[in-house]
Length: 155
Image (cartoon, rainbow, N blue to C red):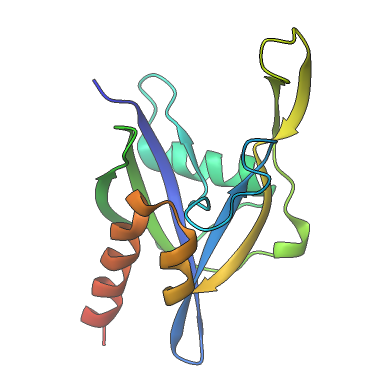
């Protein structure tokens, strides 16, 4: 069975246009990667964990901020790695200047026997839809498309 993760596609409206919240992964591998490297806040499911519960937990772990609101399920997407991303859209806001992520130990440099502690996420920001399509992991673009369909049907 493919790996499963759960996440939140947070958006806010600015001048009647949605702004998409994305996070950038931390660590040396991602340091100089930008376009196609950002993601919705997400993470792996614990065994038998409800996907929405996991998505909210991962959002808080990766941003240091809780999110509330009306969570709208989006169709799952499959990333190039084979991982399935289960996601919910929710309208809201976070303070992008106060992103505080959980950390983990990473063997670095590879095969050196040393480890470094890095944040899972090193920054987060809101993007226009057009910019979000450029910066998000390409496998997650259908999440943006699904949100836009939902917003269009609400008009």
